[in-house]
Image (cartoon, rainbow, N blue to C red; front, side, top):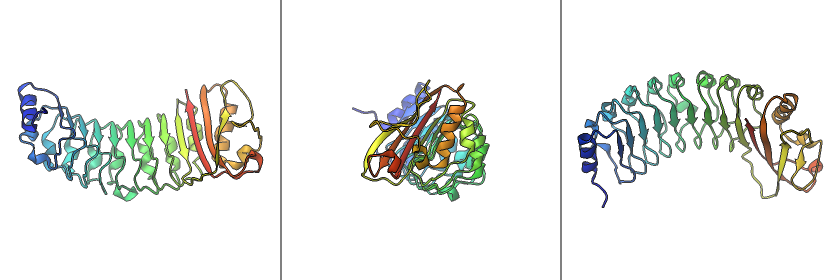
Length: 299
């Protein structure tokens, strides 16, 4: 039999347990959990897979909290008091109903991982100080409604992972090139047709993974194309055996730059670059590219 919520709170208090797990307990209001906000000693609170619609201002009483997990609830708003959690490092708000973030949200001085996946956020949802979160190492904004990424993204210089997949992005700012520690950039499922050249030159500093898929999908024949193989200077080759030196003419100019840059920089240890394409016919030379998925991994 599972423990009652009251019992979980009592045990945490009596045994000074730093972690409290209330995942999937049908909780609709945190204030209904007896004594929860008296646990000022806890460092981790898991409330994922519940029915929360709000987070009360009392969250500020958990002054030692480092990890907050609200994944898969129905949260529509956050209190401004959440920015007073000076020790908070990981905040998971994925799969909720957030339309905006509270004023002062960027005042979390220790935040390293922020997951806002599957919400209703856009570029106007972010408070003015959002990009003051300069301690962030991972930012997940996938499955939202962003059409543009603010240029201030360049201020998050410690970012190693940036996930923007499945939004409505039509372009990326050149300031993304200032993210010199970035290792993973996920931008598939947007409306991008070109990428800033700054992304190419970032490859010279560290291992990177770039994922991009054009949103338009068709049911046409798909082929996997290896654009570059370690230790070779081969022309792009289709998995079905076709080799075409003109293939890159069908690829947005930025991808030509990426491939060219790698060929001209042999000191880079490139694991692989793969392209999944959708063709109207069977010959690369005479086809129109409908869908493009490129994954680039730098070691």
